[in-house]
Image (cartoon, rainbow, N blue to C red):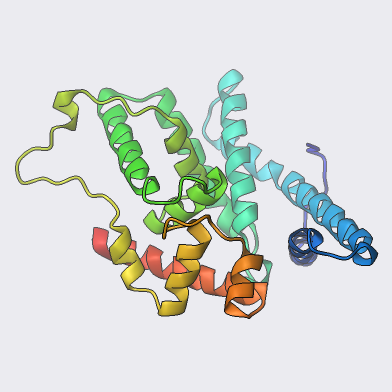
Length: 261
């Protein structure tokens, strides 16, 4: 990926964001389009992917700046840069160009969290390793409640938003082996490991929001549905489904924070 792309202005970010979104909608519609429309839709898909590459490439400087601020050099810095790039892509996938905020406002926290997490793994003490292992176990317990056929990226997104963690952090937790001894897993009397309560999170949603979340992540045992399929069920636009999903996940995030307080 190119690293010498010009920096983006606020207008550039908005234009590229709209192009990326148009490409995603075109890709969803391409499989059911008639031959006459397929060529135009394929062009929109290509433009969207090109816009996404330019968008991410133009923000790679941000990752390098954050890596430099850690003081790591050489191979360690290269590894951190890779972790930061994964977080940058995740932030780009979640950023909404219509909300009026600059991309850096969401990207910087994602990248910093990923770098801190990567450095913690490299320099972990026994206490930190234990805490990380318990985090992995909690994430896997929640992930098991989601449909097994759900793509890893969608699973990470759902689990992450439910517990207030970035999807990149959840993916890393799901890839890691959680090895705990009997002494480490034993919880002292009076202490209880806090695990996300999915039913409690869903209980705060409206009927429509609950349906969208269950269909989107396969929580009822059925195969997860795409935005197009859910829109067809609800007889509304994909944009409406996206707004409902976003509002539902925001409610779940707030509820998770309240329950953890």
